[in-house]
Length: 408
Figure 1 (cartoon, rainbow, N blue to C red):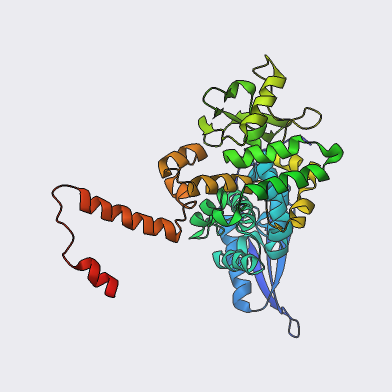
Figure 2: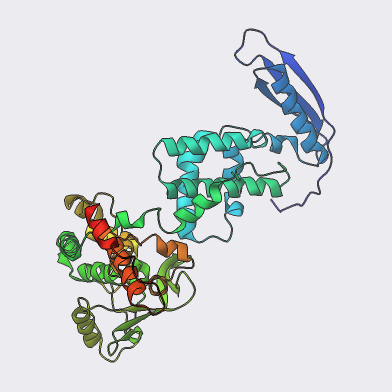
């Protein structure tokens, strides 16, 4: 059928409320109108618990009809409307974003709110639903993705004129979005404890992979020691490695996109320099030498020469089984990045340098990796004392103060 554009036309409605005693929802609200195109008589009806609820429903349809909206469209459920207009609501997003959005829609939004007419969903309904997801133990990122797809569907309903405001825009959730975008509240808690733990993980992944491919161990070790994302490790080329100063210039990442995997700019859209520590230099040097005069060759690939993603690494190494056997049930591939940044912070790398290595846009994100222990705090106090007692022009310590403190 060819597309036919119809301009909005205000449709006059007749309406009535019928009381049917003895039923769970005894008030039947109904509206009738004449279709301006076909001239046919049409109607919609809905049952309600009270007369006020029925009248409110009719008033909403009258307001919609006054704005030129087909009353039958205004009575669609959220599930019906979302399924019919999802492609439009998610336009412009990449598959790696739409996949978790669609999962959130199917698994959480539709079961919780899908049965409600889209014009009857209020901010309170969404608010209570979100907190129900949290109470059920859903992760912050899961809730964020689920709420995001609901916001987009409701925003499309606003553009279509079905509703005047988006009830899914809950106040206070912008901060939650930011926390879930990349890292969690306490990323240090997600890091591997030490070098031996990292090597145990690398060995376990190699042992569980097909043909015991050693490259998976190198990928994991390199990612943790450079605080890089798996997609960024996949994007390393020979020409990016400076074996004189042992610096990796991180310029790109491999990411899913329409039509398959693609190499794109880093998440921050700018290149950054990352140090290559002694522990990974022999492995990197061996790979650079093996690739010879091929500056555009990838330093890390799968066993068949393919590009690596976090999903490829997970499936090829049976990641979930491997980490569970080591006692790290909740360890994700991204936690290798948390590991590297935590180790760098504990090694005393200045905050501004750590931010550049991480590629963080906000200093606040980097600060979450800092966790000075008691020894560091004591050392800071001694450093200040030395400064005060050796700097010219400052008063000396009060006489007898040391003896007084010892008695205390």
